[in-house]
Length: 443
Image 1 (tube, rainbow, N blue to C red):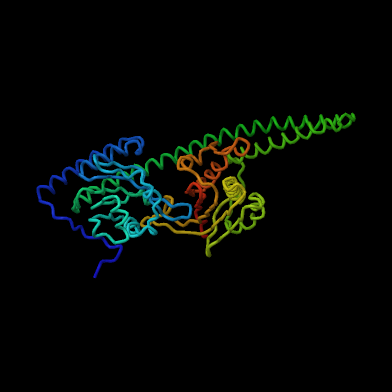
Image 2 (image 1 turned 90 degrees about the horizontal axis):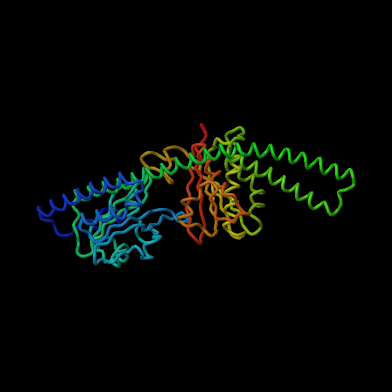
């Protein structure tokens, strides 16, 4: 009776002579040690990734070594994206193969791999022993045997590192599989370290900018108060003298409009600095969304449909309602601009529980969370834009359409409450923002 599709496959290549096994084992252990030392000393793992793959390839004697990142697409489907590759001399590289970018694991017949990775187990063996649905894509790359180790950044499945043998089948002994597991752990630790450092730096920048914005807002507000008072006296004086005619009226209206815009800018700066805080309370996130839906539809315009969804049994969260509405509206405005006034915006509210054993999406810590997903059908974002999307004053919009503070404010609100925010996007199909709020005590 054949084994089930997600069971480990036998490694049926010919047995290795003891002397050869010892030589290979020593070479792999030496290579892993060199790679681990290099990645621990590097300031950014991506800068040394190519050298690390070369070390791994030369020490194992395989044809190709590569890194795949696993992340959801705009529809939430887990896909694989090849990011780095080393190929031995004479071996065809696959880094530019379009079939290896955005592979939907389940739909492509590789669901077994995902299930193994979630259990932190490797995939290895001869391709001839793999399930029939997996063989065509692998044989197209001339792979005869492979070993793939999952890479976890903390509790999150980040991706995988793979070793392809193309010239002849290569038997993987358990000691070699375990040794190369160390390499994947080192990669995962470096990735997690950089993610944490980037988050800390982001929060430090936001805190510094918040203090600066608060000071500027107060000083600017004082200037506006003087200017507004002087303008009001001037207009009253002109009106009393009968000197405020039709020719002067446009200038008066322009002055008043400028003062209104200045006051609006002051409010946004104060909101960004988070110095105007109200009273937090336990709130029903979906009820707040539903009560805000008329305003959200007005922001979106007639060409964009708003679809609100709520799963049953979602607990309450502890937040100031104004802050919650501000975060939602900033995401809605961002989505509207991305859709060019045509498409569908979906806001979905659900809850989830994460544990240290099972982990969670978007590097969530163990706990109970309310997740609010804001998904649009807009133009999407490139990987480079996603990496900077929460930076203060970073924007891809024209100067008259955005200040670059909207998403930074969302980031500050969510993280200020002990939550997290994740984003995924595919150019041409849309973007998805996921806000996670801790469940209120007793919620």
